[in-house]
Image (cartoon, rainbow, N blue to C red; front, side, top):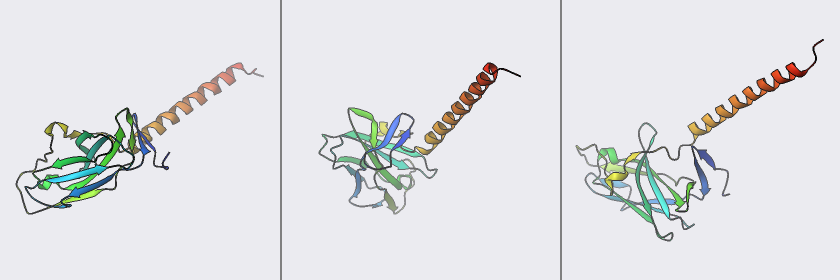
Length: 171
């Protein structure tokens, strides 16, 4: 594997592939009402990318998903920009034939809105792709998995202790 950043989240493996790169075009400072293109690219020829925005509560909001030929970047056009569009974005890459294996997260890109606007609804190139997503957080799922394994171990130990006490001759 490519390091020790492999995480199990629900039924997803993160960190299977190296992290993609992300960049903002024309740049991370965007005037209210303008569009920005977030470009995800991987040297490993990943052909599926997902863009996520971290909300103020720390949850990921899926901003888009796109397929590429594997050798071209994935462009996510976001806009017109509002104050709600500002924030930290990351992308993840995968292979179309391995939908449960994902890259490590890209380095973050912070989009900052200059100017003011009254709208608070973020928009994307495809309005059907904005949804709350459970992808790439990992830690709560790992904690639940550890808790389940601990309970199973304790229950098995108690069961074995009862069996041993039952089968041992009493004096």
